[in-house]
Each structure stands twice: as structure tokens, then as C-alpha cells.
Length: 148
Image 1 (cartoon, rainbow, N blue to C red):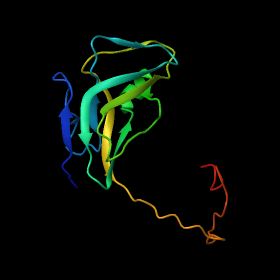
Image 2: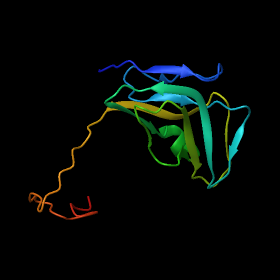
Image 3: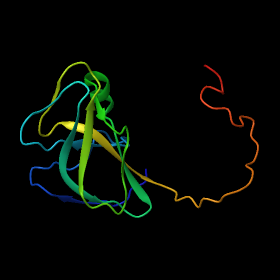
Image 4: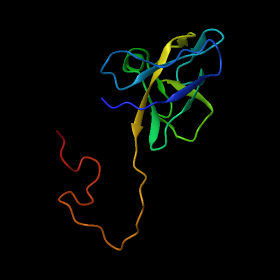
């Protein structure tokens, strides 16, 4: 297991620090910071505060993913599917939650609303060429490698 220090600042004393649910968890739970219950209507997106700011190390990125239980059981998931937190961002970490269910859902202060994965990334050096190398797949798109 790789580890890297990530400094974090509470912007509100009520904010809960991210926490891993188990020793082998890749994502740390993010917690809602609200002044009261927030109801998310079907098809609605709301911005939920965490009250936290991070300093992600250079060469790493923070990725905000859905919590599988919240997404499958209640239909609440990040509106942008995966949030990207760049290493130079120092503002508040917020989660844009979308209700994809047919029922209103309520978020309370302290609820686990998403998970944060910190991972290294590669910065590409794009090089324009006249032709690309050939592969067995070629330019086959969606479903081109089979249906099963």
C-alpha cells in the first residue's frame, strides 16, 4: 500500500475529516456539512459542502466518486460522475449530488456523500503525427470487441 501526506484544512469546525471504511479501502468517505437537512428532488442536483480544503501533492489528483451504497440504494451520485481535484486547487471541496431516483432524498449533516481517491497521474506530452501505429482493433468503436 502506497501512502502520501495530504494536508487538509477545516474551513468549519463541524467538518469531518475524510475516513477510510476499512484497511484496504481505496476511497476515503467524504461527509456532508449542512445547516440542516437538504432534500434533493428527483432529477435535481445540489451542491453539498464538506467544510474542507486540501493540498494534494504535485503529481497526484483527487478523484471524487459515488459511494456505491448511496448510488445504488438511494440514487444519489456525483452529477459529473467523477469529480477532479487538481493539485493546485485550494478551495472548499464540494460534492455536486444528483438524484437519479424517482423519490426525494434527504442529506443530513455528517452523512457520507461520496468517496475521495488520491492517485498519481501522468502529464501527457502530446505529439502530433501523420499516422498512428496499427493494432488488431484499429478504429473499431463501442462494442467492436464483442458483445460478451
